[in-house]
Length: 357
Length: 280
Image (cartoon, rainbow over all chains, first blue to last red; front, top):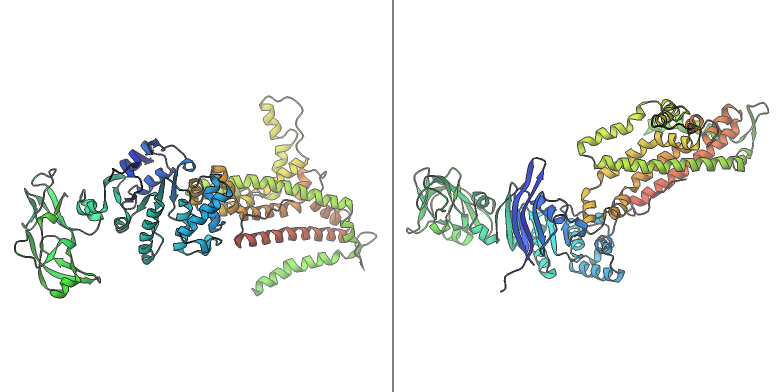
């Protein structure tokens, strides 16, 4: 397989609003035909970054290269980039068809071409039956599809989506996640999505960037970020993580109660510095074999049945917070536990990630 | 509901009915009223002399409306674009003239437009030495007075839909490739037409029946229907004809209001493209 081509290069981009540095020296590359997610808590700068890509904000510093051309100062109506707004921003006085045609009319294309392209995209987004409706006569999911069709019909080099599923209820959201991915595949356009929902980006993105306070913390595939978070914040923000606070040792972390958690200590951490050892709930085994490196006893405080698996809250002497342990329903059936039981937990050193506190 | 009806009947329906009834009688030989039925008064309304005054009033009111809408819409647009916390302050200043009396505000324009008034003095200060421009007692002065007095209505009427407009709509239009002008023409303007129509109707209806401004700033040389009605009642002492004129005026106002209501209805019934254009 050939090396994927870089479509968009964000090069040391910064943006200030008054005294606030909303985006602080962010550099990242987005590849051709990629589904890319910008993820972070609210106020992390992801929306500002997206608005700079769309052309609604101009960076104070840095370059935004699209196909090698700096577009940082090109107005939004002159960029081959389209944005799907969080509010959808459908024109309320126009029908679905008029909304979708609008962008092509601006390109002054012949009426016949506009018609055929609009028909095609309405078919792709399953909106043919609603073409003559006004936005107010549509459901949330339909509005979302109109907004998507309106942006996609322009065949942009890059489609930006600002929290595209934020306004939908949970069930519809799950369906639309897969729908968006299918569409992206079908139209072959690079998608950049902004979201605060880490689960959403894990499901949809080919690669994702985690931002906090305007800075880029990590940019990689969801799998790599989940398995090898760059720091404590990312480890906590993506998925669920159990943390054991303590001091860094030569080959692990010494917890407050003196217990040792074995794991690979990063080179940047000096012995004796404050550190946390962490492990994902699904990596912890209940009643481990004796050769398991890291083990602790605990008391089951609560159980949450989740269909496919069982989530246990286990109080241990290692950390002030209870451990979260995920057991498959299968395993739980073989050896049932209930609230108040004494249990033993174990996990391998290879599953431990150690970060500076 | 019931108290409101009583109120409306006592203060609106009864006086209007009295004026309407008056219009069907003859004028007494020495003024006063001769209580015999006639339709002459309404026939006289369509006499070229008086119809001309109606047309002239409509033209002056229409011009004032057009100017007030352009200025008022621009002002409302600027206010709606200002930072949120400043908007109430700007709106307050826009309606501030309403806190003073209409007559006083109109007299202020006399001070301004007088032969040796403030504008002339300002011109002299800039080195102008010729004849003072004659501005007062012109049609322009009447229009200026009407625009000035009714501008706040337009600003308020246009500000409401402009401030409610989702700013992302304009951004979406830009994002889809539209220039700022196209965005205004195809998105912002159609969505704010109801406000423009409401403001325009206010100005037109209040202007076409106005008599204070043409009397003071037009110097009696530019007759509008309002002056004519005033003259019939208080100078010519022909109450029945005055009543007929007043009824014709009310009919025009009702037509304009109905047209606007129809247009507004159509707009909320999803076709905003066409607006209620009410210029006379």
